Image 1 (spheres, rainbow, N blue to C red):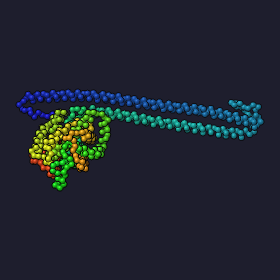
Image 2 (cartoon, rainbow, N blue to C red; image 1 turned 60 degrees about the horizontal axis):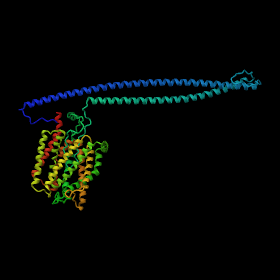
Image 3 (cartoon, helix red, strand yellow; image 1 turned 30 degrees about the vertical axis):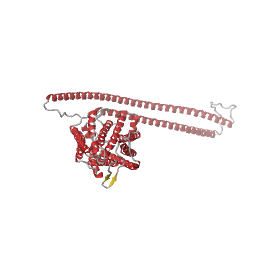
Length: 592
């Protein structure tokens, strides 16, 4: 987003004129580009319209040819049917004449033999003799006519049966032809509809090519950490350029959330922040100190492991064992297509996307180990406050990598966060850390954790839009689990190796289960908070993480902070909250 140069003064008219000239030239170039693009799109639309008309004409020609072929086929079938009937009748007449002649010759021979006027030679076939009239000629003629009638009736019955069979066969073939005709018409109609839909979709795209319908839903991917980061939205330089909708149109088309839904989302976001703060306090209790910590002034917890790099790795692994056992079920519940997306990612072979996903997981792994080390040496509220250096690193990294220059509010927030970090960390060097931790190691680890977490956020932004946040988080959990396992499997030096007593394994396992359950519970609450209230409002509530961590640390284990540290924590919280609020208000300013 271009920003107005706040350092320009009124006493420099030449610079103002040059700026106006540059702006005028830029506007002219944009107009020329707009006219060029508009002309090209109009040419494409004209070409597509011409092709559409040609296709419609070809389709009409095909239909006309189909009707002609159909009529010719029907005429051919009817002509062949009439010729076949005539042939059948001719053959029938020949057979009847031949049978009638044979019958008459046989009857006349019988009549001649009975009357005593039989000839010396039998009557040859094909001749018709004239016998002498017998005395019982009337009776013989009646018998002959009866036999002839019977033979003719039988012949006509056979002919009727043959005609019926031929008629049924012809009717069946005609029905099959009609069925094929209907199927052909349906196929042709479907083809025409599909061609019409494709042409209409191309026309709509050419009329409005910058309408991004497949915008990626804004969701937070920060629930893998014990605090909630503020994920910025720059345009990565290495991502392929995609159509970006105007903020005013996006604001107008976005569905407005009901006030009750927003209130529910804010309550869920606050609950998620509370669970994450409890996670930090439980982690603080799990790590040993010189004096046992007393919860609520009643229960004494001596701790399980001493603060150190190797022990932080071990705690992270125990927590991830529980997370990886339950996270697939939770991910499937929240996003049923999670496994399809992961399978598609494995089949895509996109090395650039894989490098971003695994790189973000590695930075998250380092951030987790370092924040555990920091919480083990300094109070949890101070550690989380120092950890909030990551918005500064993220903003500066976005400026360098993506050209997303921060606004005036962003610069003021950076100054406020820096001042708050100094105020929050200074008392830790002035007085010994409670519990006997190493202040230098704790502050350094918290700073390094914030810096590495900023790397995780930047790589997550680069991968945004290519993978849904839930499968992205599941792959991150799995990769962090692998990195933790490999780090413990590789032989480490004595200073970095885990140091744990065999008798505290039950307590370590219980602590890992508690931390894993709190992680998943916060993840679930944060996901529903984003669905109800949106990621921007959820991130505003997430800025209360340091304050809530310090508050629960004081209530649960009586971990007191210096007033200067509390002031620094408040400054950091307000500065980060200002960045989040400015992020919410930016689209409204653009729309106005």
